[in-house]
Image (cartoon, rainbow, N blue to C red; front, side):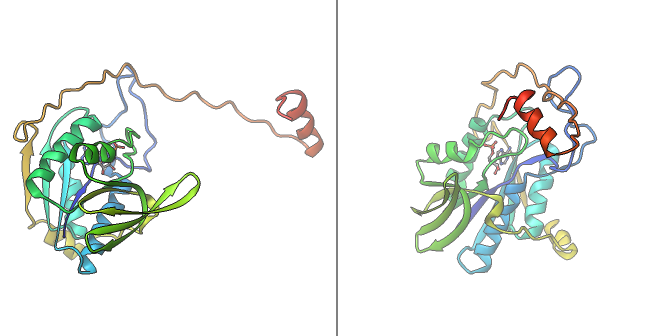
Length: 249
Ligand code: AMP
């Protein structure tokens, strides 16, 4: 089985996001960037499947500016065999990303595409679903457990009501939840070895996809500042304030 894993470079989840003064977006200059967290889970799962002898090759793919290649290098250091970097600048909408991934799937013919459930920068939660629609492949989203069976996957999904178990046929697209596994750290020797692995560089035009934006972003604003709270002396005062001032009880 061949696995394609999509990894996106985003602002590190520990960074306090700042909005640009002209409200055109968020500040990214001199800001720490990392792999989108659920994409690390996707890579980890691919490596585990390969270690269990059920996959023969893992290809990590990213779409983005020059530095996005770092995310592919990290995936290679963790266990992916080779990488693909589709170089593209500016804002990339999920539809454009999924069209590019569709072309890569057509070329590479993987049996499974693993992705994150959501990118923490745009919070779209759309790319996996769009890719499965474009490919006309089954999908399992928000996976918190994946079992590979012959030509099928059993996937446990995190849904509002609890856990749902489904079975889907391969080839398929699966988007990974943070609870799927514990991503490993890359060891120094593996980081060094990853430098020798191949990363193919492509452009959107090589793949024949128009990535011009369809969505016009009007502005990006900070969320409203929370007002300072107050301290109450005792429970009686708390109840009185909730009843008479906040009017919530
Ligand atoms: P989104 O639909 O934007 O929330 O992204 C969902 C998932 O799609 C991410 O977790 C990634 O696995 C994948 N993805 C989105 N954008 C990119 C990108 N530019 N390069 C590689 N993978 C991406």
